[in-house]
Length: 181
Image (cartoon, rainbow, N blue to C red; front, side, top):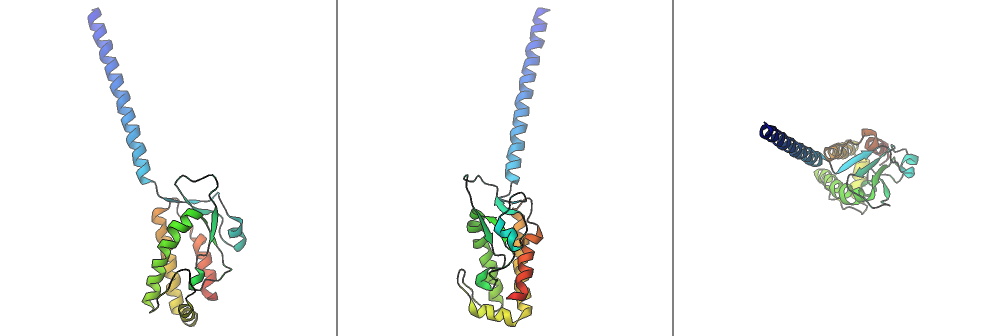
């Protein structure tokens, strides 16, 4: 009888151990799955840059989900870039410096360049594109197309942003700039 009791106790301990291992494996699998769903960008509604809100921009910041140094600065992003006619004074969007430099500018310029190319112009980033800006000033239909392409870019950016960028964060700058080019 004692032998049977010992055997049952041993068997129960093995089953418990097996269940503990299984729970650990499931926790690890869930954690890996959560990590894989994580997007590189996030809209941080609780973080605002004073320059942006003073310009009429929406409170909140386009931020990275990566680890940051203790003092990672914020930038004020011209939603309609100045080098394609965006006014100096427009509602700005708050963006973490690393996102601004490594994501926004390198991915926005090809969209703007393709849109300008469709209108017969070659634009260069970080240089005033006078001929293209004069074309936009003279042609409201092309200006609207250009504004729609910029809006589509920011909407598309939401594929890698959770929570997504609220439309007023970029549409305020585009709507303000459209008649002022």
